Amino acid sequence: MKQAIDQGANILWVDFLANGIRLADPEKRRKLADNAKRAGITHIVVDAKIPYGHTTYPSEYAYHVSRWSDGRYDMWKGRDFLQEMIDALKDTGLQVLANIDVFAEGTGKSRDGLAYDKKQWQVMFYNPSLSSAPVAAENVSDATIFVNPIHPEVIRHELAIIEEVTKNYKLDGVVLDRCRYPNIYGDFSELSRQQFEQYIGQRVEKWPEHIFTVQEGTKEIEFGQWFGKWTEWRALNIKNFVKKAKQLVKSLNPELSFSIYVGSWYPLYYNEGVNWGSETYHPELPWASEDYHRSGYADELDFLMTGCYYPEVSIEEAEQSGRPASWYSVEGAIDMSLQAVNGQIPVVASLFLKDYDGNPEQFKKAVRMCKQKSHGVMLFDVVYLENYNWWEALDLK
Image 1: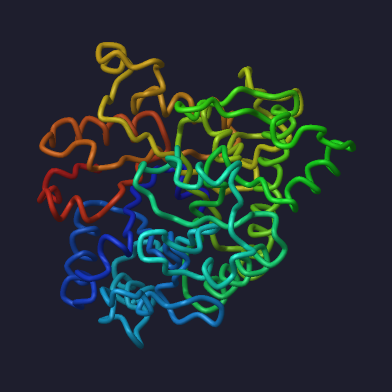
Image 2: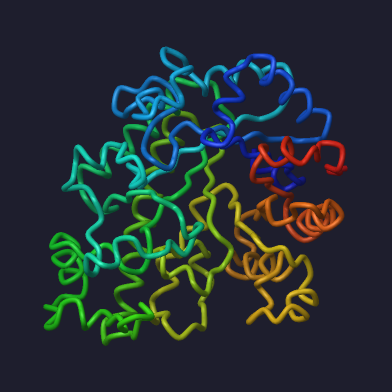
């Protein structure tokens, strides 16, 4: 699998929330399989667990998507989206990767999800007014309810889902998404305080002000005396989970690939408590502690997908549009990704197709940039290929 990524991968993501209703029709699944094969897609990512904690297959541990309170996915009652997609793709030669949204267990919009039954799991924010603060790694309207990555019950639950998917389905790989904190403002529970103080070997005298303070109105943060160690500790928490997840997947099937999706904006990713770079990469950033590199988890992966989610393709375009840094472009984001991974694993640059709505030539240019500079391209999401009639515009050769 790793060799296949080294040779260049064309990965297509199939998000259940965007496609679940349409793909309830077997003919639409067959058409997707045919289109993907004809276009040169090599791998398909299929949601097994969505950002609100529900599974697309019958799970012993989680609610099924058909349990959604508004009934929008009633057509999936008694059905298994993951298996039906595997069946639709089995004769295409495409590799199927199951995506699991990890520390995401509810939605604030409809109040669906396990996080409402297990309120003790939920991330506790810096203060209540910040519970709806924008999620830097996603769009600002994201309503995901996150759970605390160090809560023992949370860890057991998420690993049980990963084990269930790995054991019960014929797959080529497992992908993790939302394997992170929601944003810089969480988690500030008593559990997190206790474990952080144990990590630094002393008490934080002013909690949470000695981590950081929040400026009124702007919600901008000012680093406190422990901020560097705090970002290091949070990233180590995520790395520890990633190591457990990888060990589990490989123990069940060493042939499966193990990968993660992250945003490419590494200099800002301390917000999400994640260091997706290699242990060998020592970032020179104002918030990074001397030992921050130890929290890098890239070395645990077979490959990494980084979201190069910008309408500007080249660094030159980013400069012309007044972007604050070169990595606010597809090209610059790929450069940043490769720098942070430091040659340890393949990187597949990823595109958000909505960024090119109405501009198929810019989309083609972005695909070419990904394929030239990284180990392939990941397209998020198939729904835009359908909505924009872009299957013919997709040139992956």
